[in-house]
Length: 246
Picture 1 (cartoon, rainbow, N blue to C red):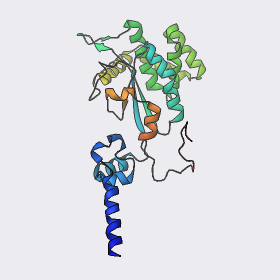
Picture 2 (picture 1 turned 135 degrees about the horizontal axis):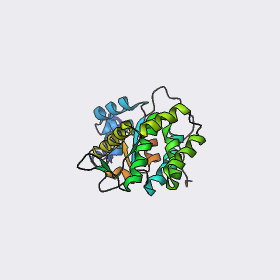
Picture 3 (picture 1 turned 30 degrees about the vertical axis):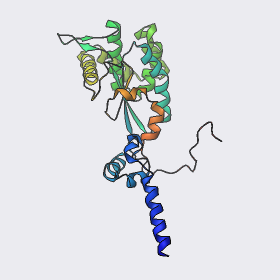
Picture 4 (picture 1 turned 90 degrees about the horizontal axis):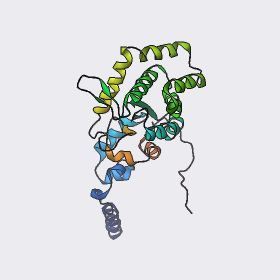
């Protein structure tokens, strides 16, 4: 009996040693209770899981109105994220991109004055339209045909009420719009720890953390991995599946 006990103890020890915790990528640290326990990650992982349960991921999109790559992302992938993960993600739109401040405090936009107008108009729309992501996607779809034509088309498409339209236009034509545009430039310049200088836009910030390396991730896949369900969330009963398996 003693021999059997010693054998089982040694087997358990051997299994534990199979994990080289120093070689496990950080993205996997909190993915399974066995890893958390065996590798001694209880404190950081339990703190992370407790604080993240049921909390939406904040996805910040830094972009500029006349950027082709931004238009492609906002009209395509971002709309899918908004539709599929609206219960898991809060999307913050920041129209400024590669804009910067001139010595006199005015804004210089990468695609010049027309882009500054587009950034400012979209900043006002983001403030006053509750579901701004579909509206901005609509505007970006047609902005190359002219800002005014694009916004009017989108007002009709989404049946935007007259009061909201008036608020947006008043914002655009007043100091309010200037202040919003400057706030978005400041927001973009202050992302940390990495900035957009070496990457360009669209540029994604997750939970207010800006990393150049994240720009090469697949946003949908990461959202699925990073979202932590609350204890009260109902299980669907469906098994995880992936394509191309036997």
